[in-house]
Length: 173
Image (cartoon, rainbow, N blue to C red; front, side):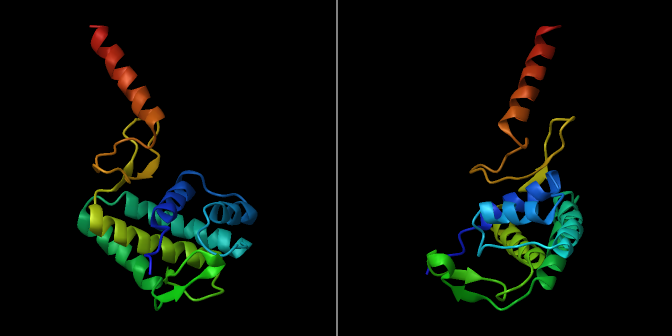
């Protein structure tokens, strides 16, 4: 049996929802479906509202000042997402674990998958693996999925922009 294969995509989706909130239910469903995070989902206005509330809470997890605060916030999300694990082979994707019942609303799936993915990623790789871009004018949220665990910027574009700025500042003296 393979382990749930979409932890990284779930974390990317949750962080993307913080950085670029969906404006319509269809947009929310499209983003979920594009990543192949489960059965083809449909979203309602209620899902969009619930995801908006969830992303506020996910933002608090990202911006937590201490590991203890991050863990407490994440544990609250995990408690709400609690469901018995099930083995499934939906869409012929191979046997893997799901942490939700069938036919739950999309917002509940996003909350559950994100909470479990974050718990797994942060406990295995370090509680510091969530953050904000170090480029002052950016401050986008990111999940550090790098091997070394030292990510400071949301993208290479921001990293390069900051490096060029530092280089120019050194050579103007």
